[in-house]
Image 1: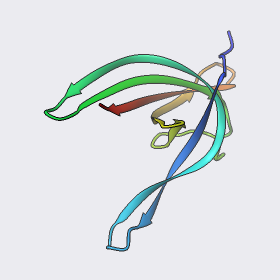
Image 2 (image 1 turned 90 degrees about the vertical axis):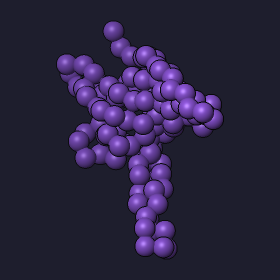
Image 3 (image 1 turned 30 degrees about the horizontal axis):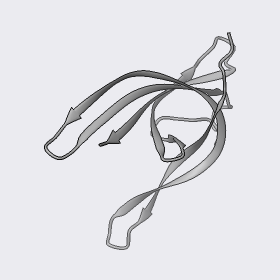
Image 4 (image 1 turned 90 degrees about the horizontal axis):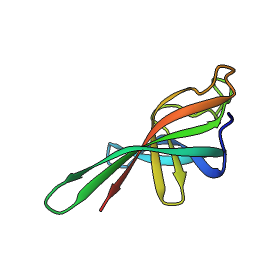
Amino acid sequence: MYPRLNRKIVLEGRVRTPDGAGGFSDVWTPLGTLWAELKAGTGREAGEDFATLSRSGYRVIVRAAPYGASSRPKADQRFTIGDRVFTILAVAEADFDGRYLSCTTVEEVVT
C-alpha cells in the first residue's frame, strides 16, 4: 500500500548566525516544499504553574531523496505547516524499495 501524500509541508534547516554579542542565534531556512502523509501518534501533557506543554508524536512519510540531497530530511531539521512545527527526531526508509522515508517527529504546543 502506498502512502497518501496529501499534505504540503516545508522542510527547514537550522543556520547558526552570530548575534553581535559574542553568541549565536538559530535561524530556520526553508530547504524545499514536500508532499507528505502525517500519522498522529501518542501525546502527553506536562503542566507547570503558568503554562501547559503538549507534546504529540507524528510519523511523517515523504518521497525518498538521495543521501546528501538538500531535499532529504534528517534529524535536527524540522517540518512546518503554517504555524505548526514538527521537529525531526529520526529518519528511516519506509519501504523495502527505498521509495519513501519515514520521519519520526514531535510537535510541541504551549497552552
